[in-house]
Image 1 (cartoon, rainbow, N blue to C red):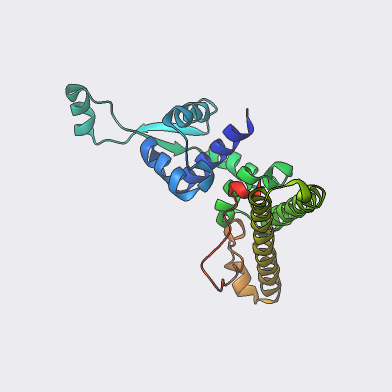
Image 2 (cartoon, rainbow, N blue to C red):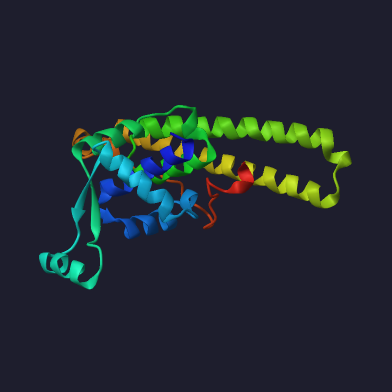
Length: 227
């Protein structure tokens, strides 16, 4: 399985965990909710869905009323298929959510993982955020070293492009710092909370303390300029 197809399967399972959907609706959600999937075709989505069905993680159901199902063949239309997550599919998705390996820190995979942080436990969120920050700090160090070596040979426009890329990475590092500090503050609050409040806490869906932004601009984790 390629890395990108693995990300797509993860995102499909996550969206279907929220509610069953037919293919067109699922494609719209992938495009609008997850920036990493801004441009992909039905030719990519449907083989993924078939694979998930074959693995027993999804089932296909008719999304039409009985009357519509009878009328569709007469009208020459195919009955609409709705995809539903199975118990095995939910278990598999939760297993994927718990993984914090190096792939979770890469640009595309991190964007997809972040989109489902609301379904991810706090300790896993922290490991993913800290891993992503470390990865970007390494990238930033390499970019600075490269710029220092080559700046005398670059024209003004290429130099400006290099600076723009560095600023994008620096902006995401600052954003990650805010998120990490908010998660830590949320953990401290939870630790000092009353027993009754702790019992109401949903471990798999802790939202933590997202930072209060002074402006509405947040870095896009899938922004190509951070590559």
